[in-house]
Length: 444
Ligand SMILES: Nc1ncnc2c1ncn2[C@@H]1O[C@H](COP(=O)(O)OP(=O)(O)OP(=O)(O)O)[C@@H](O)[C@H]1O
Ligand SMILES: [Mg+2]
Image (cartoon, rainbow, N blue to C red):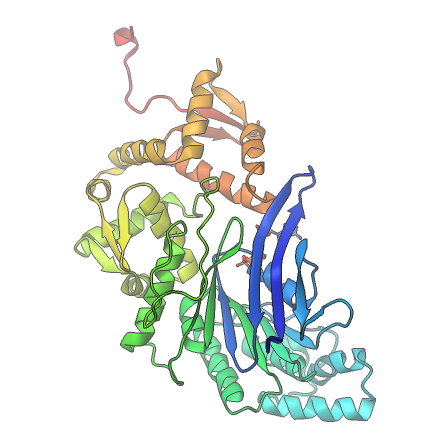
């Protein structure tokens, strides 16, 4: 018998599109959740983190495979879990105390008992005195305290959280993270394990005993490793930075085999990635230009970690920009170091029109969907085609939200590169006039 609380066995999730296409969101995945640990699940947007969390909690059923709690399939008996959401998800018509009592009421706990337990939990999370306040009267940080209280009051065996700090300002988020850690480390929390979904790398390294990194399209575990650093952890310490760099590296190289975990020989579990249709990172050309300018001005290379700090950017926003520059051949990424290429320098130092030409050259060389759009438009007599056509191509590979994002990114890049123009009124793409004007008289 395993001592795991939760065992996910080859769980897989498909969503069926309105047109009948099935999109695989989570590839068959094994995962155990054991007592005594904070586990952070990291991954880029759309990698299926929330989907995976929902399957572990029993809120959603896997398309195949199974989730066991203490060796028994969920469904027979719902597990004792609670989830804290990014959006707080409080009942606006109930006051703080009533919000915290609500899950106990749903479980049939008697009124006196539930009041007692709710008051005690409110005290634990620093909300005493706020019992009669309504959610709309509270700051984001206080609302999330109510979210914690409402989760803890049911004494969940595993406390799940889906980006619990993402909607809060930096300082409030940091305060709540520290308080959560303190409650956990001092064992004032009636819970055996915490499972946190986040896209914030530093948050994961700050909190986690174990980090799982998901890759996307489809979601799959790319790395699963322990962080053995003592608490409180110092964000500036060499070991901390090593873990942050390691995770950055995994997330910016979606197709590479992850490197060794700091201080370990091999990651606990890695699977060779499956090559899928090239997915464009969701970065706009202005962001890519900005990154290349900063790199060029800063001597041509920079450490990922420092670059994020310099740009005061969220990881989730910086990663796709770096990935885009890499795809286009304007930068490379090795050992946590972003290095501008000769093509990147040429771009950073060019004027607006020359930049467009260089971008066009790079895009047509490296980006499959833009090559495809260009050749289709060239082949058509009227050099135009409906958006629908490319939506259909993308539909084969991505979920409908992702199709929208892929299309929007391809539009942004293609129009900047003056490969084509978009006519939104008629929902059509039109081949651009050649960048270098050919005078009518000189035409063959
Ligand atoms: N009910 C649904 N029907 C169809 N597709 C869905 C559904 N729920 C999620 N998806 C798709 O599954 C993929 C993974 O979604 P999920 O919300 O689990 O990702 P995530 O990693 O939590 O993303 P984020 O960081 O943006 O919260 C996305 O492409 C999403 O569009
Ligand atoms: Mg999510």
